[in-house]
Amino acid sequence: MSQFRFVFVVFCFTAVLIFAVNLRSAKDRIFYERCACDVDISRLKQELGTKQLLLEGLINPAAISQRVDESNTDD
Image 1 (cartoon, rainbow, N blue to C red):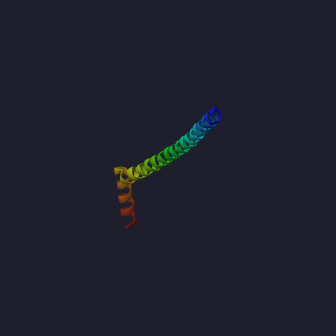
Image 2 (image 1 turned 135 degrees about the horizontal axis):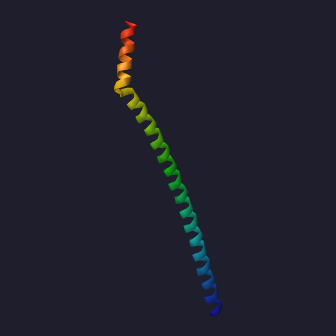
Image 3 (image 1 turned 30 degrees about the vertical axis):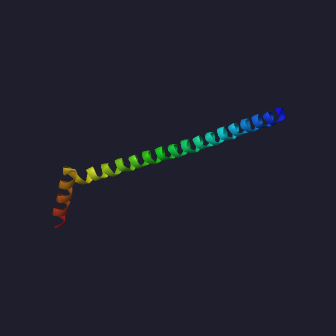
């Protein structure tokens, strides 16, 4: 009977260790995916800022009047 208890304790201990390793690898995978998402979000924010600056440059009144002046001189 004591040998059965020993085998049972070793089995439970092994199961707990395997479960802990699985949790650790899942945590690492989720952390990596979250960091990758953060990088993508930062890149998209930078692209959006660049496009906003370009748009503001296109609709800037000084830029519009400059284009109108250029088109009037071409005529």
